[in-house]
Length: 131
Image (tube, rainbow, N blue to C red):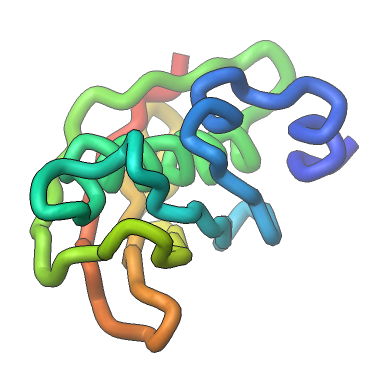
């Protein structure tokens, strides 16, 4: 069963809370979108950095999961975010995750978070430990 099918059958509670909609999920790329809701914002009505980071972290975890063997799990061990532009309340942001390194014990992913017009909001690099 592919990752998208598994997510539909067993959605991730935190991803549901954030409102993440996974559009595609493959071993080499995960794409998802999320609407910046008021409850995910800081003042003045722009996405809180933690919400942007959690969005990207979820995608990196999903990308790793798409590469795991039966019985393996993953956890984030490092994450770095460069915030480039604000995402205002009501905006639909898109995350595109691609591999930097896919090893046996660790995987490194880069997620580009962009606005609807393609402007870079954040660039997130994270390392996932394979358990």
